[in-house]
Amino acid sequence: MAGEQSHDVSACKRVDEGITRVFQLLGKRWTGPIVSVLTAGPAYFVALRRAIPGISERMLSDRLTELAAAGLVVREVYEGPPLRVVYRLTEAGAALEPALTALGLWAQEHLADGVGPPETC
Image (cartoon, rainbow, N blue to C red; front, side):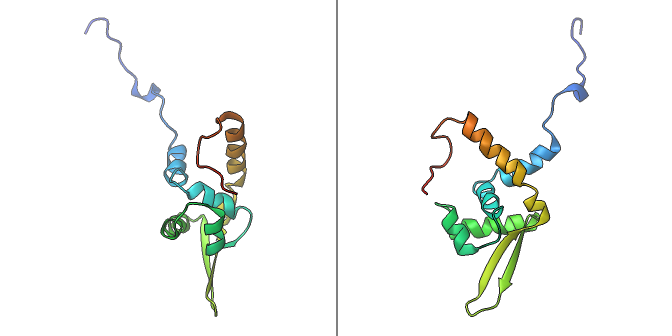
């Protein structure tokens, strides 16, 4: 057709594949806070639950399973009595700390109060 320009698909802006993969995992509700809590060091399941107000045991368990499958968290079982389960970040999980810190600082500077879940501590 006259006057129509050809469209170069390769010139279109696209979301970076890495960013897409990161947010598919970390963009799920509760996942970021779980990783953030674990950056301070290993934690028992009960301690994680207390540190993340509003998360259910089932949701915490599901997210920890996903993080373990992604290679970001390791689950270590210590025989009892009582049986204790500790979660810690792998090297790959711990490498997220600078990015999470930067995101937290960005949020404090650029997000209005009331955006996001309320703090209860």
